[in-house]
Image (cartoon, rainbow, N blue to C red; front, top):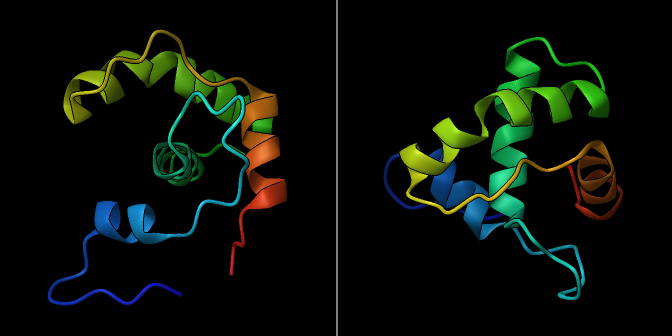
Length: 89
């Protein structure tokens, strides 16, 4: 588990997590997908399909708030692939 110095910062924590995916085919940073998943779950998402809908609804807001160029939102299989490879503990 990554250790943070000073005040807890969700962005710093998520960015410090080791990348569990292979480089090939990665379109979204892992920390961004985890952030979308966390916020989606807080908003009532219960499945990867729900997370896809949440990401589609809010991807422009994520892009502008985080100063990222997001051409489109991640799909449900992107979230499923992430959850298979990331160590959630």
